[in-house]
Image (cartoon, rainbow, N blue to C red; front, side, top):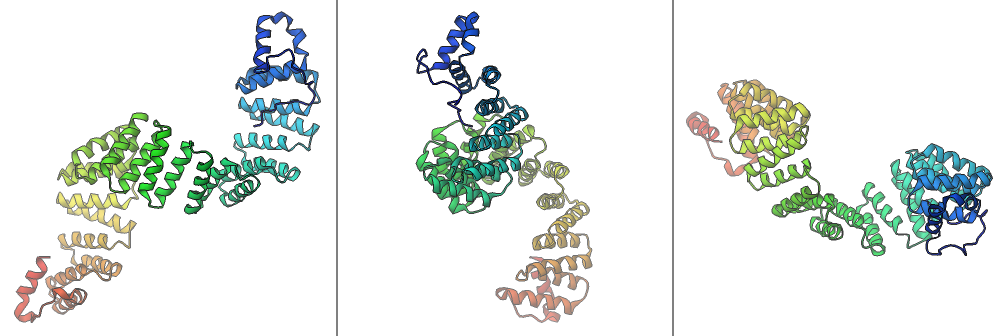
Amino acid sequence: MNNFDDLDFLNDYEDNLNEDNPGKNIEDRINKDSDKFENIKLDSDNLESIVNFYYDEFQYDKALKYIDILLQHFPYSSEGYHKKALILDGLGKYEEALGCFENALILNPKDSEIFINQGITYDNSGRYRLAIESYKSALELEPDNADALFNLGLSLEKIESFSEAVECFREVINLDPNYKDAYYELGYSYDFLDMLNDSVEAYDMHLKLSPMNYNAWYNKGIVLNRQGKFLKAVDCYETCLAIKDNFSPAWYNCGNAYAAAGRLHKAIDCYENSLKHKKGDSYSYHNIGNAFEELGEYENAITNFTKAIESEPNNYDSYYGRGNCYYNLHRYNEALEDFNSALVLCRDYSEIWYSKADTEIALHKFEEALKSYEMVVKLEPKDADAWYDYGYALLNLKKNHEALKAFDNAAENNSSWVEPYYEKAKIYFLLGELESGVEMLNKAFDLNPSERFEFDFNKDWKKILEFLMKR
């Protein structure tokens, strides 16, 4: 919004005012001698100073009172309605503000600034397409208005028209190479368009003009992290934190970057700092749990996953992470309980079903494990490992023909993997289908010649069975 520093219907004299703060000077006079205010209020120059003083101090209610007095005496002033619209926008009274913009435009339909500020109010009220129309009206009057182009780009971002937004911001920069906010928004839009190198370059240009913008350092770090440049991302987050050390998202994402780079203890430190500034953040606790799990410190991981669950009971991922830790500690019943809790919250995550199945195998709950593996292959029909484990579970239950089909699917989805063929060879031998068993054995040897040995099945069948059963 513009500060609306002058109204053309006001006389330009302030000899009797404090030049450094005329509004405050008038306010003091009103407070000191309120009974004489009737004589002051008709002085348009004084009223203008009061309105601008309160507006600049964000005291919109008081500014509104005095702009209404102005409009009582100058009811055909487009500038007065324009100023009132800005004040009402500051108060969040968007409908009333838009009414005042309309009055201002009726009186002066050629003022591009009125259209720009009308667009900002439409944007503030969430009516982005109407905002876009207002900015376009401003540009029809003044095609090279950088502020109109910039605000048009902002509203285009909000309706996810990022390519069009980029065009706006680039045009702004062509008009004014030092328009720092245009570089910032250009970086933001390029990020959404997955033009990550361009995004980094745009943020770099912004930071040359505004090196203390911690948000820009943070956003650049996000983009670098997406590029897999984790330690460069850390540098950006740490610069951000040097400017604003209580910015918890930077601590959190710095932890993510350190974790991705394998520096897990540093990651934990960052997450703990994030928690200092954002108490009880479930995501920070969860990621501390992840880091401890990766370090093999399962008890510490469990402690932090538990805190994450206490903070956000509907976070299925924390139940899943804690369940994996219980599994690695051979606390299978607790693991199974957590996997079941996770599945109540998210039934379509195949990894949870997979872990549940493995846990049920460890607990010798083979029928239950079978149902869990069935869900895995239903959700991930191309997962060769899942088909193999499903086949193995079927084999444990002596469902040999169904196991053969499962191993067929495992082999089909990973044609270079020998283990499904060995398992099929076992089953065929168990079924007495010796030729098929030998055929599967030879296919396995073809895929893995280093394990081949010569045999005569009639003489060496014990050797073959011993080889297969040891796998």
